[in-house]
Amino acid sequence: MQINDPIVGARDVNLWYGRNHALRDISLNIKEKAVTAIIGPSGCGKSTFLKTINRMTDLVEGVRLEGLIEFRERPIRQYDIVELRRRVGMVFQKPNPFPKSIYENIVFGLRIQGIKNRGQLQEVAERSLRQAALWDEVKDRLQDSAMSLSGGQQQRLCIARALAVNPEVILMDEPCSALDPVATAKIEDLIAELKRDYTIVIVTHNMQQAARVSDSTAFFLMGELIEYDSTIKVFENPEDQRTEDYITGRFG
Amino acid sequence: MNERTALLPKPPVPGATRRTHLKDRLIERGLLGVASLTIVFLFLILLFLIQRSLPAIQEVGLREFLTGTRWMPSSRNPGYGAFAMIFSSVMVAAGALVLSAPWGVGVAVFVSELAPKALKEVLKPTVETLAIFPSVVIGFVGLVVVAPRLASLLGLSHGLTALTGIIMLSIMALPTIISISEDAINSVPREYKEAAYALGATKTETILRVTLPAARSGISAAIMLGFGRAIGETMTLLMVAGNALSLPITHVFGIPVPNLLASVRTLTATIAIEGLDVPWRSLHFHSLFVLGGILFTFTFVVNLIADIVLHKWEVK
Image (cartoon, rainbow over all chains, first blue to last red; front, side):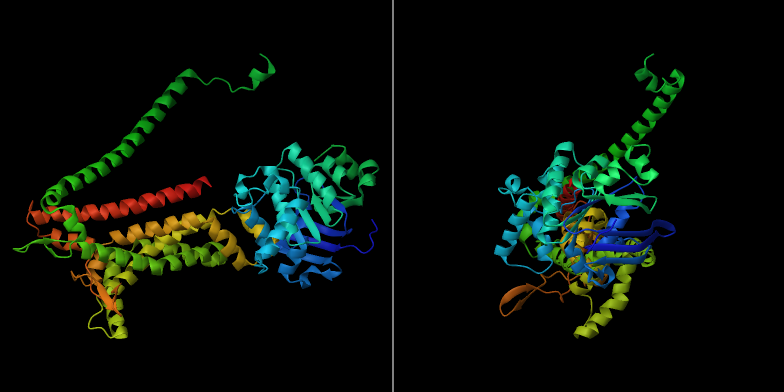
């Protein structure tokens, strides 16, 4: 799929976990201020690919990466890792708030940047919580432990925490897989809301979700990118037989 | 048979069931017996401790033991004040922790978060080996290696001081602190650290702001158990701390402060020294049990707090 001025661009990316060749020649451009979904069966490399973008794969021992990934036309290797991860935020599969207060969770990213001004911290906390559609539910108990929130609230808190450092891209790794349908719907509404200001890349094993929230969809299979096109095209008229088999539920 | 019942496991052969049940029950009962026996013994020791110390408490009064500073139980004009020993015990144990807590937690962080795999595999058994050294060996090392060097370093007439005891004790408390802190640090979910890294935190920031706070109750428990270990230690202190019966307090600009360079005698050392030749069933004999009771109270309370704190950590 032709994308001009991509915010993230991957060219011929190969990745090995030890001897396991997990990503094979992935080339894929991601459009700014849009939602890109990555779908595929378990173990197809979709989460791995997502984690290469903010270099979370660096944390895994024995990983080897080849090829080029650019963020804003500059190779991610050339970024200071702290800056890259501030500009490319991440939301994980399982909600993972810190065992701290709701407030401290949100301002964590600012605190490690050395921001101490209380007014500024409070302002950012409120703004992020509003953006994550959580403010009304927690505004009276910001000092309560984040662990006291429900799973869906925790995941929105994690989104607010990622938003607080003002990222440009938000990577979401199956953000709803641990949530019930109501909480899932809230996150999906939120994604639709956020794409006005942010670029979102979402990995999901839920094809309906990909169809509902995304503008374009990439289908991964066994470490390869099989098909990448507008979501409508991928779901209604896929080019590749394997894509069709997957989305019609013949395997996966 | 409908589909549902077909899925249930088949009932096992009746004879086999009874036999395994009997075996299970025997093993269960046996283990329960052993466990109960442990508790019974513990209570018997406690009961014995109370019973043997009662005559001295009735005769002298608990207050004299806790606040008096004159310990001369075999004198013609006997004194039973144990305050100097209680103070020495606490001072030496607390002093040891001042050294071994940051040291031990530092090692635990290094082993669990920073050390490369190969080094980790060397460090862990080394720390565990430290725990199996007999205290008399550590005491001997303190006596012949540490004490003389400390004396010449600080210009003292001899090196048998509270400080020497503190140094040796801190080494002995290390394994406890390291292994329990390490467990606490390892049990911090990986997801917390990932979240911190994904927000741009460095390794140091992640350790200081996420991992250690999340492990703090486990680490506090580790330090308290280290205190329990230190306050109960006998042989090493007997050998290196000088065994002087005075209150180790000195005045700096008129303010009383603990004197680490004084020779001290702890509760444990006193029991060990005097217990050997005390006249059976004398007041002196009973008063040594009072010292034991005081020591027991200390370790019991500290362990109890540690246990509560650890439990809180597990629930989280």
